[in-house]
Image (cartoon, rainbow, N blue to C red; front, side, top):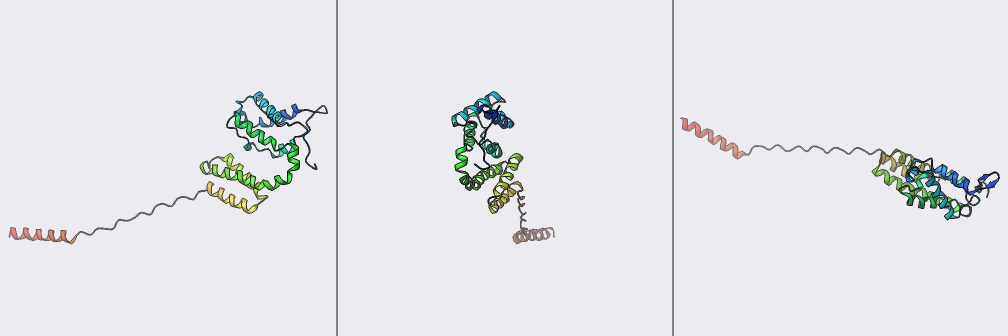
Length: 204
C-alpha cells in the first residue's frame, strides 16, 4: 500500500472498533455545526457515528483513518438536520474504505479537479447572495488553492469571478438631462403689444 496504511487503532496491542469510533466522534465534536445538529449531545453523536460505521461494514482494519483525517472537510457534511447529517457522513466515510482507496487512487486523482470545481461553483453561487460570509469566503480561497495545483488557468478564472463578487464596481450615476428652454411664443408677444397700443389709444 506504500504510504497509505490501514488505520489500526490499538488498545494494549489489540485493534478496536470502539477506539476508531471515539476518535472520529472526538474530531467531529470539535465543530460547532456538528454540535448543533445533535443538540450538544455527545452521546447522540457517538451513537450516530457508531451506527453509520456499522452500516458501512467499517472496522479498524479496513478504514484508511490517516487519509480520512488528512482530507476531512466539515463542509462535506450536511448539518441541516440529523437525517441529512447521517446521509452525508455515510458518503464521506465511504470514501475511505481501504479497498476503494487502494483500487481507485488514480481515478480519484483524475476526478479531483472536477470535484473541486463543482464544489467551488456551488460556493461562488452562494456568495453571490451572501458576500459577507467570511467563513465561506475563506473556504472558497482554500478551494482555489487546491484547484490551482491541478489547473492554474481554471483557478485563475474562478479567482477573478470571486474577486468580482467581493469587490463589485459601483453603478454609474444616471446623467442629469437638462430640459430645453422654452421660448415664449411669438403670438403671445403680439397680443401683449396690441393690448398696450389699445390702452394708449383709449387714454388719448
